[in-house]
Image (cartoon, rainbow, N blue to C red; front, top):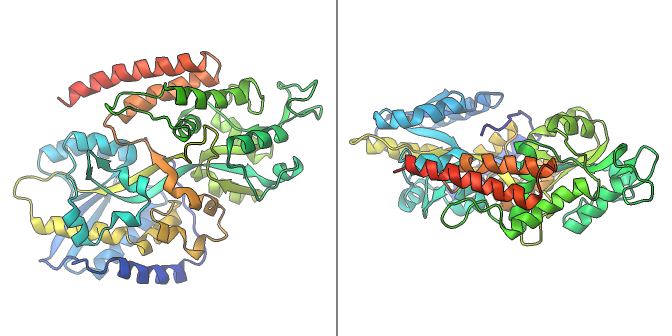
Length: 447
């Protein structure tokens, strides 16, 4: 999956970077660094948009400060890398370092294209996984071993219109966190063209003037259901890595979302992301769950909006939201590969993921990958800071080799349920059946 990219900047980065440079020095204390002979590394990544100059600037900064290591960056579309990497590994011509996204990494690990990162070499390089948000670092773990270090992160958030909240008698500085708070707020924000609110006698759900929440039919819209399932204690796959998104917890969570459309009438039926995006921009909908990448758009429109973590609409087990991420990895190399190059590659990975560099990378629109950066004063007044208290509850679709075979049918199941084509339980059951059919075929490819 390729996530939308955007570029933005935060004021105050200069002083913040100086502070984080000191923190990075403390966190890297005891790390050996690379002191071997001069080596050249190839670094393959997919940051080809407005984020490319930032990445190139970081590479130059590393090269300038590490005379015995020279990193040559190569940017190309993510899809090209996914196609080429297995053949590059098989031919012994793999790059030294490759960035792999969350929905691809376990697949490459299972196919033997990525090498594990031993605890001893991570420690020697000064990479401490406890400095990162736990679920984010674990995204690149598989069967008890680590295969990558997070460099970039995005998340599914909930934007909210402060003016609509205030008009509905809600506190715009206290966005909902629980299911009950969310439903109450969504009902309060839903008014038909005659001025009647949802639930009142004569209310016409087919003639909405404003409504509570945007639900819509595509993979981004399905991530609301993904979050709800995890919030209610459900999972996408079971312990045997078969699809399991039809559990009672999953059915209950998704049913609540569908009821927002079919029973409470606080969301429009048969809508699209584009239509809901336009409606939110026009002040017609109170809550707009989507990717953080729309932040710039709303800021440029000078909307009076806020950003909060996805409320616990699914249940009360835990906070949860979908996240996407990119990870620095070391591909499998040919026999006789220079051990010095691996040490240098680990040093590069350690430097690139230090707090100071991570803060610089957030200028591209990435979320902080670690608490030390999230707590930086730079973000004190930034709207996106509204989710920073729960960044440790962002969960990527990873940990099993067949993410596409799970999430594709899941997205179709959400479509069937949201559009009312099937009851929720049937939609999820049919989705799991199709998913496991695809997984069975995928398993044969790993034998």
